[in-house]
Length: 449
Image 1 (tube, rainbow, N blue to C red):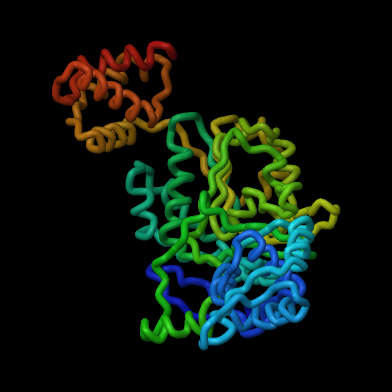
Image 2 (image 1 turned 90 degrees about the vertical axis):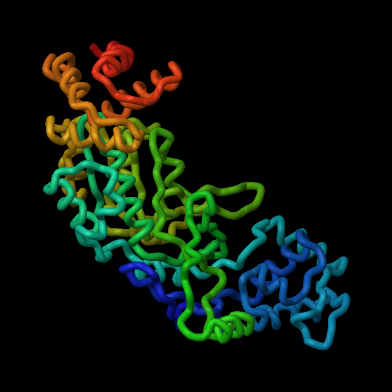
């Protein structure tokens, strides 16, 4: 299998990169059968036309020495032909389909129309997931300052976040709306994405002859900062010869941060099967393995909290899940991600004790006290290039917060942006005054009083 050997890479941050899957030296080490690769070669030439041997290897992300024997077999079976080449050898041959090969390729397309990087075996994917688990990442107060720098948090609140990240267990963030729950959850994601190190995920994996795609360019951020130890020229030669290099079927990415909100439903947590293409796409939470999966506004999803929690109650406990293919066969996969539930609804109305017991960390965020509110207000003034005027804050407390309205951290942003809009509309310098706050709050808060 491809993980029997490893390539060492350097990581720029405090969390070392996991072992990189090594490029297979043979068909056996690729974990794929000759018949499987032959079908992939036929589909590739059928859809892309005449191709050089080296281009076929690059397209399938396999060294040419791995596909050499399958190509010879297809040629001996008169399914492909050589249209030309030079003295370099088979790697420079131009391969095309024969009439018989086109018939065989069409049959292969009917079974599965996947064309792209060759998949890795399920066992290799599982092993790699456990090498790059979210549990035990290096995290300390100084490291959290950058992603949380834009938030105003009390020290005890800040100190609760680090242990939650290190544990890699689920986090439940709750409290009234407008006080930074989503911002805190996203800051955790930013830390994981920038300081959590990089991981390797495959373009796809194969389980019981079913291809499941994993890499999603719309969700995964490729990490191109990795540099192999050793001389750069030597590294380039090794890559060309596929000797001691990383298996190109894997993509090095920053730890993923995937956010879902009210659109979440149960089908999104299952394999997505294309009846036309005959292969699968991994579910959304599966793509978060090795990173963060944030469920924002928990309790407002299309799926009920009860159904969602019943779906996840065992994965949260056992750290693995099961995926089911169209035939009904199930296979076990890792559930290695930091899941964050963020809600402004009453937790007691959403979940029962059995679920709460499986949520290791609970973080309650309440309305800010006056001193914290002033700091948040001043921070937003700075962000908007606006002067800080304490008289504007005094007015808000005199008119609203001491008369029933609960302060919200988001009020600072919303009110100051309203002041900014008023100033721009009047073509006057953006400058905060008590009078402008009176006008802005009358527009923004009136509907709530």
